[in-house]
Image 1 (cartoon, each protein chain N blue to C red):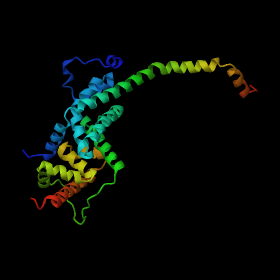
Image 2 (image 1 turned 180 degrees about the vertical axis):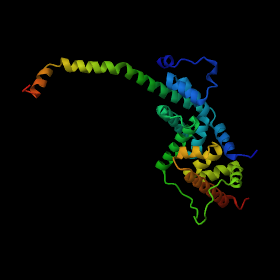
Image 3 (image 1 turned 60 degrees about the vertical axis):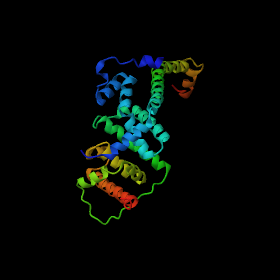
Amino acid sequence: MTKNSFKELEEIYIKERGNASEQTKKKISANIGLFGFIGHLIELYLPSAGQVLKSFDLTTPGAKDKKQKKYPNK
Amino acid sequence: MIINLLNPIITHSSYKTMSDEEALEQYLLTQNVNYFNLLYDRYTNKVYSKCISMLKESELAEDATQEIFVKVLLSISKFSGKSKFSTWLYSVTYNYCIDIIRKGKKEIIVSLEDNTKLDLEDDGMLDAEIMETNVFRLKQVLGLMNVEDKSILMMKYQDDLSIKEICDVMDKTESAVKMKILRAKERFLKIYQENYSRSG
């Protein structure tokens, strides 16, 4: 079998890395968790936030008048 | 706490022996991070090794590894499944490192006089010569090469990617890739001879 120094070099780098991969994994997991959490928050609250904004628009005093002024002939 | 509830521990026995593609499919289906962790555990060292080869500093390589996996995670739904997951991951890795290097500095490109007509067929003798280079010399020579040449040699000799897979990674035609490989090999040998021809 032919010797492959590229693979040997790869092994050397991996050995030198030690257990740093676990630290990186924790950081990535934290990122993933944060993304997931934000995603779930958006999923949960975005539709109701839309409803709230819509209701603000309807309950704002003069909202109907403004619409009427915009098209005074209608 | 919330995160743990969202990612229950996978208990079925076939979990660890899943193929990359199956783990990926399950991750997309369930969004359970443990499936992604499985892929991370399989490839983190390979990704790191490429990063350190290209970026030369361990801290930078560790940050790059983190960024690459987050990038992969965010764009995982774009993975078409045309290539193997590993090929796609390596493609993200090489392109990320190349971008970092290009942003950071101008490279010294070793020129090669272009007065010979190159035969694009694989030269087995040249392959053996390159693969059997002393590992410490290999590290030195790769360190002196430009990032594109270095990455194409790593794809070929370290990752065992086929020409077609390298075409996918580099987004180039088959003949362009063959040409790049040949040029990279010649540059490798040129740098090697310049540095070690006297010492043998």
